[in-house]
Image (tube, rainbow, N blue to C red; front, side, top):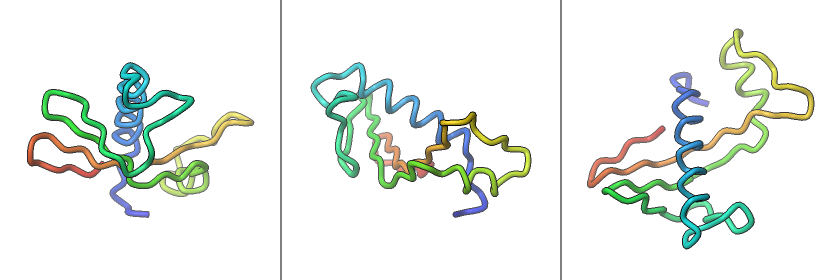
Length: 93
């Protein structure tokens, strides 16, 4: 796990992706999500691709920063590696 992980940016990207997928029925729903690795065109030149997920990243998050509090009982931390493109520029979050 890279030490320069910016957890809040990953959370923001996931919220953005989930919101866009939920509002665009032609590309996926909660019941039928866009498969990992597929490019999702968000419009206005933006594209996003989920490259990797760690459904239970609780140990990683807790080890990353001593100030991270454990999730509530029954909850867990979720991490995703995403590729975001705008035009011809690529940023990894």
